[in-house]
Image (cartoon, rainbow, N blue to C red; front, side, top):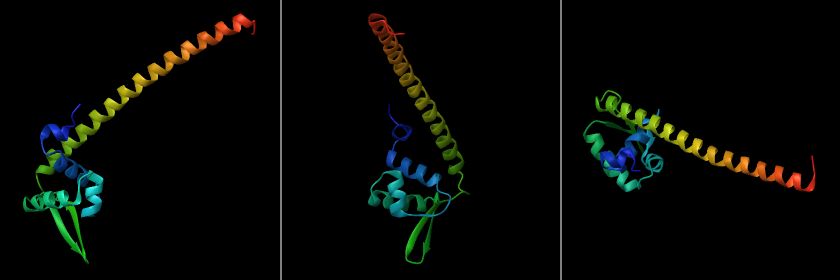
Length: 126
């Protein structure tokens, strides 16, 4: 199954925006790239575009450049809805997967219990 980021196009940019969405404070380039799972050079290029579009704000702090989302930008209202919906869908998917695994384990346990009961009858153990 393809991720929502892939479907929307530019999955690296989507992942970068998603990582930025969950940061409460400004964050450095390398940390943000690591959180998003993208190469720092790619992150730098994308962030430069996002700063031009005013979706992301850049701050110089001492000798470090920090980035944070521009909460006043209208796109973040849409993006937050998309990220929240994607998170809900992902949780539902994981829940279904866990239920499937639990069913498989349960059938194994039931089969093992039946085999154990059969073995006890054979050797006359209570």
